Length: 122
Image (cartoon, rainbow, N blue to C red; front, side, top):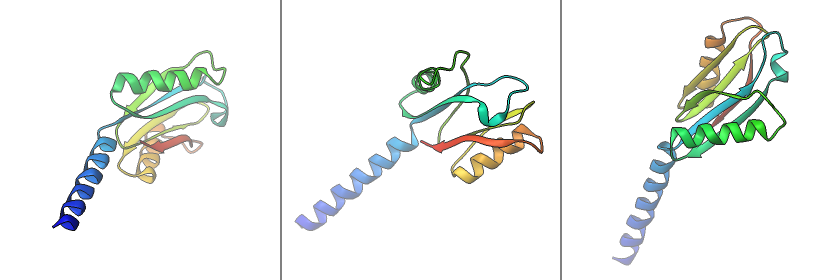
C-alpha cells in the first residue's frame, strides 16, 4: 500500500510539474534595424514566466542587458518560440516543438535570406 501511495504521489507531482511548464509564458525582444545583417540583431529571450507581461519584461531586460538600446518585444508565446530575420523581413512562430516553431518563423519571415536568429522552448 505504501509503494502504491508513493507511486501515486510521484505521478501527481510530475503531472503538476509538466502542467506548470505548459502554462508558463515566453517572450522574444529584438533590437534590429532594416538593412542590418540578421545575425547581428540583438535580442533577449525569456521563458518560464507566470504571465505574458512578466515574460515580455524578462525578454526586454535580457535584450537591454546586452547593451541593445532599441529593444522591442516582438512575440510572446507558450510552448516553443522562434524569431527569424533577413536584412528586410522578420518573422516569428510558436509551436509545441522547436523545429515547428522555427519553420513557422521562417515562413512568416517569407524570404530566401531569412535565418533563425533565436529559438527556444519554455
